[in-house]
Length: 360
Image (cartoon, rainbow, N blue to C red; front, side):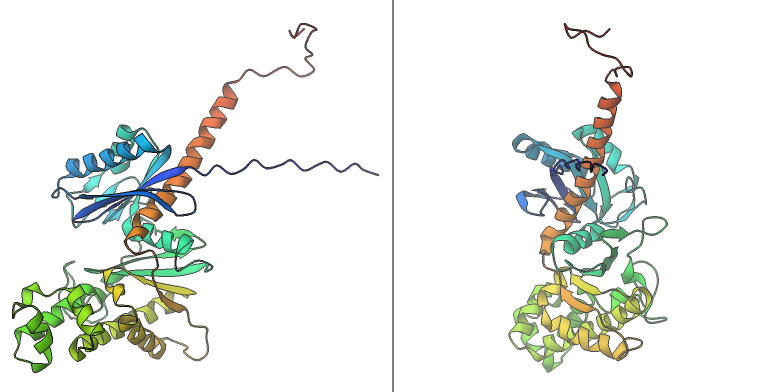
């Protein structure tokens, strides 16, 4: 009878604390996050203008502060802009003066820790898939609705980045030929019809008009349409204002049509809607789901993905960035262990120690 060798016990997985940084146009959010996605500590700083060095200084200062209180092993940065496929260089940012900025190298040199950089929509999507609304789903499409539309496709907990790292710019798909001019320079982009900007633009146009439908919104801003913003429209809709509810219906229908097209292309099992506009909940998502079901190719003969609201809110960006950093920390640790092992002197085969412990 052959002897069965006992299985070698696996050592417990190393689960370090990491820092996640989420950089926006007006603020920098930093946090210490554990392996379960729990936020241990968080801090907010204003974005100091568009200056590259000032933002870098803010990141380094946040990491230094966290490192003084916690044993952090790596730093993840989510940046609004195009990040190259190696996740080292910010190619372009609409909010900051980053143009081919080697952000990872600059920050890593100063904090002396492993650093990863990615697009902020990618970090948000990863967090929602691992710790939020996408748990249990293998193929997830995330869209973020704010000033425009960003997003990411996550396959088996891996963000799809494309050949150059710039996948996920869903908001700039053309849905209306020769439609509204977009800030990107093209016309008829999806985000011109299904974003926070689209909602506010339509509401302000009606406030400036003499439409009696806009009476409540006009009263709320004392007739100054420029003071009207998304949260005010959301509150009005929750309070039963017919015009605000109708505006959310319009945005939701455009969103549903676009998501149906994305589903025809990628066949996700779950669609997560995040960003500031998602705070409206079913005021937005119900017309979205209805338009989606009417527009989906093969409707009635296929499984439809669930369309859900994001769960992690503004924390998703830095939670996802910290989770990406944790993978970098593990790789760095494995590399150090291999180098340490390789540097140790090895005994020759059949070498036996003497009585005094010396070899002979």
